Length: 178
Image (cartoon, rainbow, N blue to C red; front, side):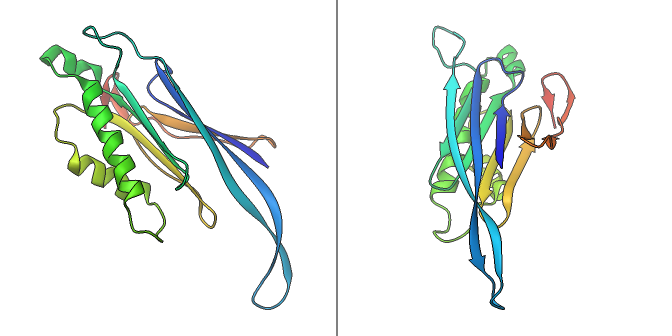
């Protein structure tokens, strides 16, 4: 089984983080001594970011992180409407994703990553003005793919056999996420 998950920020404008999950069958023995097959889930992730020039810098409004060790990725798309008030929405998105990565890396050593708790911790530590969408995904051997998604960021799961899942967009109107 191959599963491609595309986590996108906004409308695929400037950044893209992608991960591939590959399932390999392994024979395991259950507690009662019977044999069963279980898939070993792995994640291969990478990113590409082409920032737009903004105020003489090449930073843009988008940010992401990849934590291969914890099989977790996140993307954020700063709400560009803040620029009308002199606020850099990209700074908010970058700080949010930096704080999310910190929460993932410095969480309890043997505990599973909970994307909702990660986003909550990141939000609590983000102190600059602004807002953004956010999508954080983690892959766990026992629980599979776990996600949190706020706003018009999202992800798409496509399997070779045709199963598809698209995360719902959460926004009141353009540039106004929940």
